[in-house]
Image (cartoon, rainbow, N blue to C red; front, top):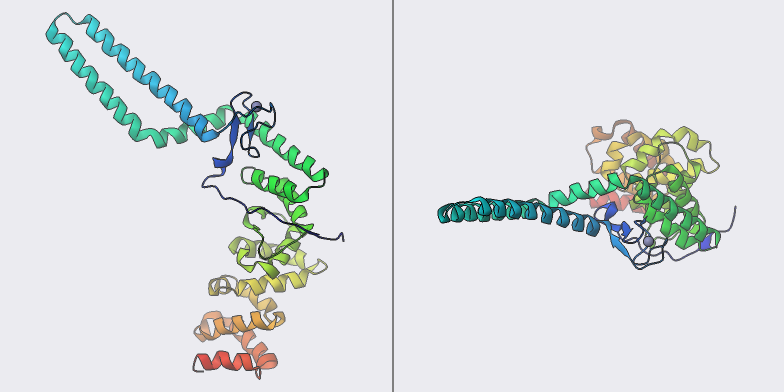
Amino acid sequence: MTKKLPVLLNPYIKARYPYNKLKICRRCNYFTVLGDAKCPICGKAALQSVEKRASSMLQRSMWKARLIALLIIGAGLAMSGSTMQSSLSAAGGLALLALLWTIQRRSTPALLRLQLQKLFQNEAYTLIAGLVNDRDSAIQVFHSGNKPLAYEMLREIGALVHTDQLRIEQILLLQSFVLRKDMDLMLDPLLMDHFNPDLVEYIGELAKIRRDLLKENTFRYILVHEAQILKMEHGENILVGVAGAAVRMKRYVALYPYLVLRYARKLPKDRFLRLYRIIQSSPNASFGPLYEEVMNTYNEKFKWDEDFQRAGKDRGL
Ligand SMILES: [Zn+2]
């Protein structure tokens, strides 16, 4: 195994929608998630957010509609024969303009979303080409030796592009780093459907340092591929670690009792103590076979352990 690198990773800045970070070049129409101002293709400082682009497109079409309304009003005025008719069509025209203005203002957020959708549809090809290019840049950075930056770039692209290839590249990079608790790590976006030993090893690492990242999707993934994980070199240790993460919350124990049951006996003391407390604080029947397994393990291994006695006393047991 190659030696792991100690690295510093910049925190990941979350966006409300994945496309919030997507930029488009005003000059060459290139899409990127990696630049702030300078376009990676033409080199001009002409990047703007896709939302800004959609908003200016929307403004343009709104002005077009207003202009048409003005033309209709103008034609009405020109064709009216009397002062009475003119003033009527002027009043009608003003009302029409005011109405149009109000409708446009009220529907702007919805129209903006539609406009964005249209932009992505019309520019689908350049959008994909831009993101492929972004990924190539990340791989180039990787080959130049700056692994943390390559990972950060892939992470940005991964927010928009959900392919297993991109996930595997991120996992392999992460697995080449010394992972620490204080790092801004993620797991859910990297989960795949099929069995991947690198992903499983990464989950095993997180079970040691960031249990909070293991949630329903991870436990489901582990359960589906449990047999294959057991065949891995440290497979069982990883599964024990995952079961140790599941006892973090009573909800997970209730959702995946058999995962916990199968590895309960091998849990380190602090994790088992936690599980014991969860089981103790629930009515005996609610965990069925898991309750029995926990009580058997407790009787065999921890019955005389002071920490467990305290757990009982706290509850008045
Ligand atoms: Zn450009």
